[in-house]
Structure formats: C-alpha cells, structure tokens
Length: 425
Ligand code: PLP
Image (tube, rainbow, N blue to C red):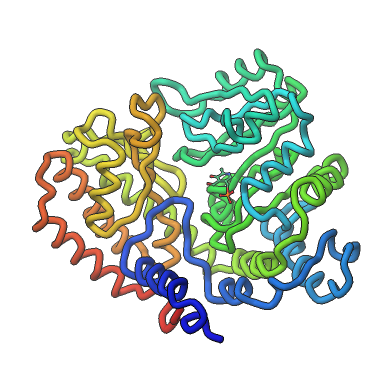
C-alpha cells in the first residue's frame, strides 16, 4: 500500500520536506543532497537483512548477496582515500567515534581533543557525551588572537596531559590542520593519533585538502557531509596490522549489532561517485563558493557593521561568522537568514560570551549548493544576499519589504537549479 494511503500524515512530512529543500538555499555546512541512486539503495529491500559479522564471516545465513555490497564499499573507500583498511559499518559519525575510542583507549584513559567551545565535536570529549563520561577528557583550544590551532600550544598541552589518544578534527574550524605536526606530537608523548575528518572528507577524497590518512593511526569520517553519501560513518587506517582487528571488533560487537546493509550499499555508491571527475569539480566549486562568501563578508560595509570572520577567511567548505562586535547574536542572524530563504546554523565562536543556545556566530557552508550545481556566479549572488541580510539586520532595517525582495532572489536561484527534478515523495 502506498505511503500516502497507509499514513497520510507521514507522507505529508516527506512531501513537505522535499518542498522545503527545493525552495530554500541549504547552507548548513554538515548537510548535502544525496543522489537518487543513494536514495534508491536506502529505500531498498536490503533494509530487511541481518548480517552481523563481516563479509565472508557472518553470524546469519543468506548474507552472500549483501556481502558483495559491503566488499564493494570497503574496496572503494580504500581506493578513494588510499588507505590499507576500512570499516564501513558505523551507523553514524558518533558511533564510528565511539568505536575508535573503544579500540584505542581504556575507560578512564586521558584523551586530548579540540575544545567543543572552539570548534571540536561532542564525541571528542564533551562532558556529558560518552567520550567525556568514560574517558578523562582534556582539550586544546585555538589561540586567543589568531583563532587558529597553534601546534606549539597543542604540544604543550599534550606534554602536560600525556594523553593516550590525541584527536585531530573539528566541526567548526575554517582552516587546514597540520597532520604531520599532530603525528610528531603523538609520537613524542606516546599517544595514538585519531583524525576525525567528518567535515572535510569530500575535499580529501577530491585531493583538494591534505589527507590525514598517512599520518594517523585511525581516521573516522561521516559519509553524509562534504562526501555527499548516506547518513553514516566509516573508519580508515594505514596501520591495519596494529589496529585493524581491534577496530573491527570495537565496531561489531563492541558498539553495534547488525549493520545497515541498505546504507552500506549506498556507501558503496557514494564511494564510486567520489572517484569521478564530476565529484572533484563539485568539491572545487564547494571551496570556491566558500571563498567567494568569505571575500564578500570581509568587505567594508559588512566589517563596519561589526561582523568579522573567524581567522579572517577560509581554506575549506565553510565560513564562521563572528558577530561578537555586531548588534546581532547568532540566533537573530540565523532567523534573519531563514526569513530570506537561507538555512544556516548559529554556532559558538571561540571565546563566545553568549550561551550555546544563542551564540555569537554563524556557520555557513557551501557543499549542498555546490551539489545543486552552483558555481562562481551563483555563489556571488548568494554572498550578496547574505551580506545584505546581515548588514541590514545589524542596522535594524531588515524590514518586510527587504526580506520579500531577498526571498525573490533566493527563488530565482532555486528555480534555476531544480532539486530532485521529477521526484515525488
Ligand atoms: N564528527 C564530527 C567532526 C562531526 O562534525 C560530526 C557531526 O556533526 C560527527 C562526528 C557525528 O556525526 P553523526 O551526526 O553522524 O553522529
């Protein structure tokens, strides 16, 4: 029975969300639009199959077909990231990360990651996350004046804390990391190095960002951010002899039961796409878009409204807007952009005086719009819409007339780049 007949309320949710995605500009840095082939895998009969274990060594019968999907996903992931070993079973980024700590450390061991308040992730040691409850979580931050991760400071913290695991990686930081320097510090203090490349994995896959794989003991990632695949996680390593078996058993049975075979098939598809020239072009447009937006937000009219960029620019797929010296807080700026038809998330900036619910910043990302087909001309227009919204918002003059005209400009862009054309949900 079709969904619309069986459950009209949920059918309405699906249709409403499709409309929302089509009619707005999606600029949440961690989001993307999966291709139809990924939707097809995720809505397939593979969701019915239990397959605890790994290809060729399952605890259930009837796994010979889904084994092919998982083997393809593993081989393709290894090829895309030039890694010797991969585990494609983590249900999510957070579960991939739980498995990493499970394998690399024992409960109570010291771990060292980027502070959540400076752009780290919950799973890197936040107090009420498993990582902060089960491990002795310590943190390095960004420098107070540059807002960059300064490796001498990371080294000093590592020498003081003597962690078992050092974590490189972030959720909100607009610059590259120095993976070789992280490796040297880990070696100096006898720690394992875990890099969480969830945000920038797509750029790494395209060769447009340094790869952490050669330097790290293990690399975790989500598959759904810049990589543009199904919502899920993945692990990679070039030190499989030391960590492979431990990591496999930390994922299953350590953290998870049956793998989601429909999602794993979708990961195989995402990895196939990630090796194409179109994918590289999309990642290049993602970077170009972020640079265009950064450049526009550094202009005089924006700066004189007290609006700054964390680190003064970007090397990646996002910009972090610092509103501390403007009349707007993060919530107000997020709401204003939503009223103009642009979806972003408010985000704490380093040394943010406001609470996490409000914040003094915005995180603005370009992956989803690059997937939608945007290039330099479209990102230039998007940058202009964002700048106008924020400058007029800060001046208290973002009235209905302005917002109506900005929504019209957003509509012109969304109509020029139709999303999931012909799809009905
Ligand atoms: N790691 C980093 C760096 C992230 O930014 C995120 C999500 O935002 C995750 C892990 C967690 O991913 P998930 O939401 O799939 O659990």
